[in-house]
Length: 336
Image (cartoon, rainbow, N blue to C red):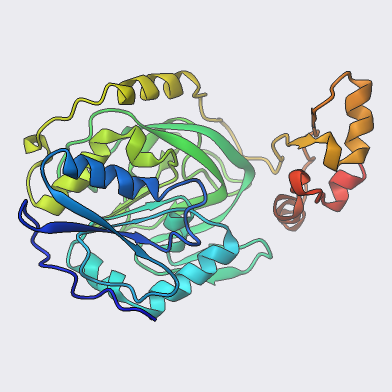
């Protein structure tokens, strides 16, 4: 196992290299979340700083000496492996205790908590750096996520623009007293609520902020869509107020944000019911649905009907087994 310790002086400047540690990209970057490290590096370089990305895989110790860390999303098995690795190789604990920023996305948020529930209903041990727990929500959340920044947990109230990204998850993350939400959800569901729970009168929130850790359900990559958040993290690395950073003019970013904001939808209201979102399947791998598709005049895809109210164990089986693109369907869907 290789060692990445003692990389550099932890106080960065333009004469030193700023190291960006991307944690376990071999298993925790489902939707290109390692792009967040690329965004940080580019925004640093455009301001005249030297920056380098350090890939920290399952074959490596976890160094405590990176200036900032990023982590992406992954499935249950990947989360369990990642949690065990970070608890065994404890460099991240040392780094967080020293105030080094850490950005975690989706499953990274879940896995950094105390525990998270997996498909068989058991609780997998988390890393324990965030005061959060995660259980299944009523239905999988897929779509645009937009929120209004909440600054209570941040080192400075720099974030003023809407935070936005793409969410795709089945988890409902509950914050404990030591964690603060990153944003108030305007579109999407963010942290959501456990199945059967009622949405609070104050609405839904996204993410968790605790110490130097910022975690969110926003893919995108998150920092490509949210330059203010990227600059907030960079300012924490440099030890300067974010407002003092030289501005960057990248015309594509506001265009991207405008386009994705137009695609967003309001969050749900009321009580979460155990009802599965429609799934679109290729009829070439699902013969049962091919007949229906042809009858309906469709030649490429067909929507499955929503599931009725079912026990959580059945819901989890459905969510974990159904992958029509690979020809896998749970018993309920096969009988439709």
